[in-house]
Length: 81
Image (tube, rainbow, N blue to C red):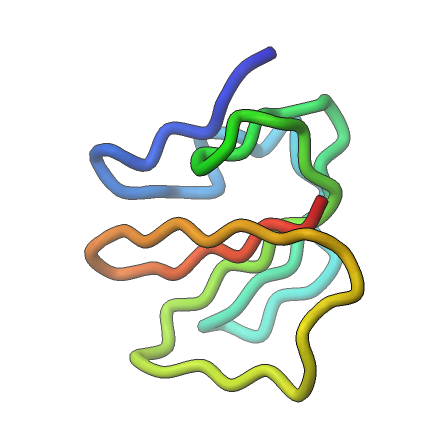
């Protein structure tokens, strides 16, 4: 299983054949994991990936399933399992 690598930052283009874009607002993106990519935090396959370039982020309620966080210099990644 290929694991998302965030050591040198993250760009969705590196994984574009394995992720399906569900929503793009310009500074946030929601993607579906179509090829069993591994989470950069725990290594397990994830369902959805939320990527934010905003300096702050607020979520209305925690997801009802496990999630992991990964941070690069300019992006926050939230991965739900």
